[in-house]
Amino acid sequence: EKFQVPSDIELESVNSDELFPDITAEEFEEEYYNSKEEEDKMLDMIEDMDYPEFKAFVKKEDPTMTDNEIQQAYLYLKQKSKMRNK
Image (cartoon, rainbow, N blue to C red; front, side, top):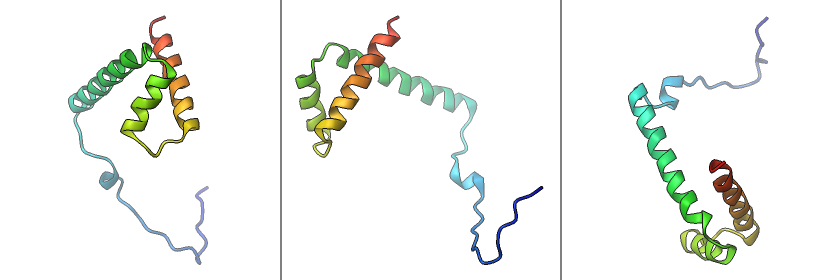
């Protein structure tokens, strides 16, 4: 059974091809590898940082982040860096 849209609702049809880039499997693999490599570099850097160093680094990159957001990011990234080495 198909969902019936009420007649008083306005719909806009969007071609899904417009939403997603047309990339090859090789391009996808390369992008994935590059992003994984960048993530590993960042985790290597953060692994040895203490919180004040991390906070100063983040504030320099994004002064709009709140202390709570920075602390959450720090704890998450520290945990992630530890987990990848197990």
